[in-house]
Length: 238
Image 1 (cartoon, rainbow, N blue to C red):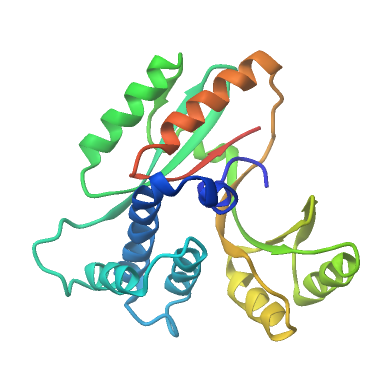
Image 2: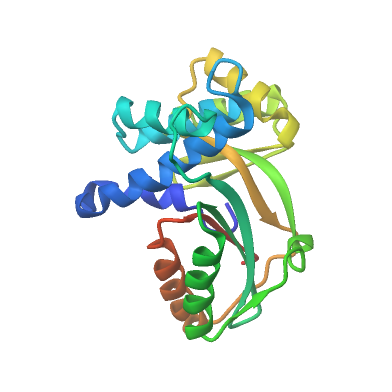
C-alpha cells in the first residue's frame, strides 16, 4: 500500500511493544466507537463496525473493552466525551503531502499536538481540503499468502471483482472500489480465504520519490505522530 497504515504497523510490532498495549487499545477502541456511532452497535448490520472489531481482535483487545467501546459509540455510556473523526492535512519536508486521520474527543488538543510535531520537523499544517485532491479513497483487503497458494488467491480476488492487486512479500493487497469492499471481502471469506485486515484508505494519485536523508527524517516524524493516542492512520503521497 502506498502511504503508511497505523494498524499494519501495530500488527507486526505489537508482540515487542507490550508496554504500549494500553495505547494500542485506546486507538482501536476509538475506531470501534466511531463505527458504532456512525452505523449502530450491531456488527451484523454495520459492516464498518465489523471491520473495527476485527482490528480490535487482531491486537488481542479483551471483549469487555470492545463492548464498552461500542456502548460509548451508541450513547449507552453517559458522561463520556463524544469521539469524532477528523482528518488533518500537512506538508512534510520534501513536498510530502500527509493526511493524518484521527479519532478525538478534543479537536483543539489534537490539532495542537499534531502541529507541534509537524512544525518541529520542518513541515507545516495545511488548510482542510487543500491536499485531499492528491488522493483517492479506495478499499483494501489484506491476506497472507504463501508460494503455494498466492496465485490462486489472487485469481479468486480478481474473480470476486477486485480492481487491482499487489504483493508485499507474503501479504497480498486487494484493492477495490469502496462500494465493493464488503461484497468482495465476504466472497473471499466464503471461499475459505483468511482476511488479515480490511478497510478504506487514501491512495496517492501521483506518488513522489524522496532521497534517503529526507526519508530518514520523515520516518522520525511518522514515529512521533504515531505515538499520539488520537492518531489512527497516516497517509502520504510517497
